[in-house]
Length: 176
Image 1 (spheres, rainbow, N blue to C red):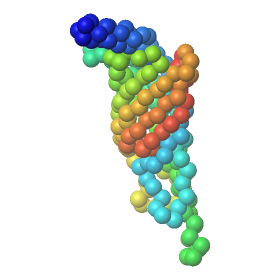
Image 2 (cartoon, rainbow, N blue to C red):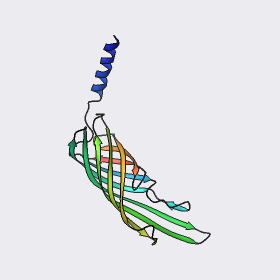
Image 3 (spheres, helix red, strand yellow):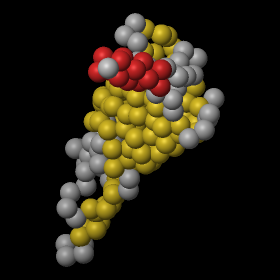
Image 4 (cartoon, one colour):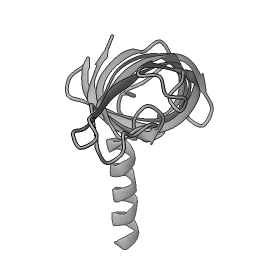
């Protein structure tokens, strides 16, 4: 009897996880997000905006493992301002990150509505504002892990954590 229950449970779990994959070769996704934290912080006396970002990715090829590799682009913007009324010292700066991303989407879970992935980005950070030697435009890189939960065929919420333009990004994804 115990063996029958175990076999039944394994069969049920296997069947319940064999549903449509949420990311495959040819899938296109646009993400719009708001990120918190990031490569440069403004110190204790500064104000900073979140990172506003947009990215695009396309499933390029299926790989053993199981999974799909995607490639795409990224652009993000963050602004800082410093206002010290005691020393009458005010300045501001911003950075725009433009990059190329690649990700591996793990499709082995086969859970309907779920897309989990991890990847890396090579970027260029373009700094603007007051000229300080520590804040010059330069190349950058980052790594991230994330997930999407699809609420409909084409709309999802996503969250990503990692090192790059922001430490934590949340937002909406649009699949087409």
